[in-house]
Image 1 (cartoon, protein in one colour):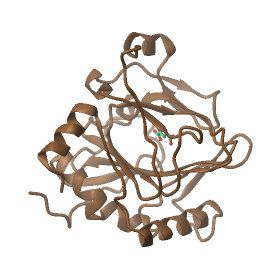
Image 2: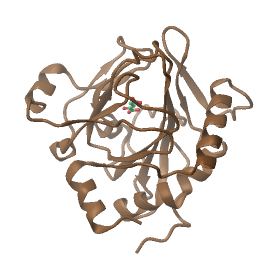
Image 3: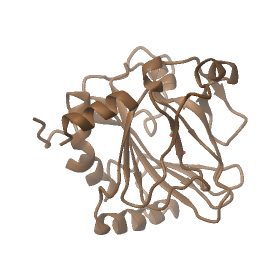
Length: 257
Ligand SMILES: O=C(O)CCC(=O)C(=O)O
């Protein structure tokens, strides 16, 4: 469980980076499974793959239900424990995604706040994400960039971009960005290696660059929601692989103080 100091840092910055959280065995298992998922080896039917315009895998969604070791990892004390502590309740997985960036081809995620578009899924903002690295995440291969403290701004205006990448992404228009992000803003690059983990708020402004390096970028994100924060009142709900219809309390077995 996190200390009061760690919780305070998370609440102030909007994120907390924890290096070396996972064991070598866990990392080995994640790497093997990631490769199987991307090669579509026995993927369960709910697993959904989005490819870059040029063909390489961009994202593999929904591996948390039936694919080990992801199923155990999102329920583990290392990952699920702080989530339960931060949200102050049990949580379900809103979605899970393996965001791969192939060497030289993996492409950008424009600046956005997750809740900037999750709000249109009919949920409130008692939500957060946990990013797990299972390979090097560097400035050159397109690590995630977080704007420190931006979670305190509330949800900014977003628009739906269907042009820049193969994945329709809600992102923040440049004029809106210029109003909020200044020279004074601290853009924190989530640089790390396999086994490092970053917890972040659903309102933190973030994005990531193209992978300009020969090293693929390997990251998985579990998006969690407070257990009673069930999507409602939306005319055309997004698919189950991205807005889960399963509300299992994955943190139920974990004790918080
Ligand atoms: O994987 C990345 O670089 C960013 C992913 C992201 O921001 C998202 O999935 O909302």
